[in-house]
Image: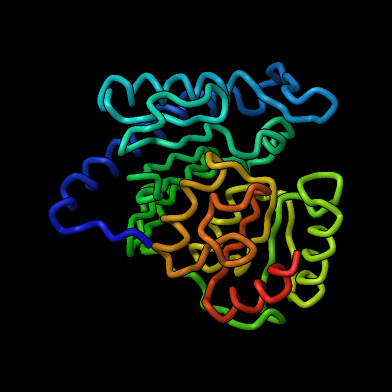
Length: 274
């Protein structure tokens, strides 16, 4: 985990406020279009990978603000690619993580806003506008705010798979998992207390407040996970690739997030062989 030095504390307060402003700007674009019957475009040919006007306009709003306030910072976004990707500071954004949920009217999508320094996540924000929930992660600390009330995030600390509440977005092998990955996930799910699906990034927010204990996913890209790392780690959780490596080192985009080191070790014992 990256530590923010004391000399940077004021700078990260500034970045945190700005990240909140970015999330507010994205809300203005997404909420006016949620459950409003807008057009859905498939951007993946034979596979269904939806994009909406909400995705595009929210990202445009975020990019305009970053370019106006921090013109030397980079921006990496799902919809419009990278600008100044070599910059020391870069904002990594997913305007609507969980577009499938969005187009089905399910309020588990989120706006993800991450800030990386030298390629490593140092600030992360998860925002769910419909339920008015927002998570902010910084090194050593994460907070949760709902309807104006803020509290510290704490992962559950569950250490045993048989007590764990597990989540993945879609467990089917024809979705995000390969056949081997789906089998590995099924092996973990068989040992857990309960499994819940289709939560996207929202599951990581729930892990940070102790409501979910384990999240296992594959096929994630940088804009999907960069903002999640500071939130999970700031709440005392662990988040790595399936072999325990830092995120970004695996071409398959495999992610496992856990509420405790012991739970993480148990999950990796099953996943690392894939």
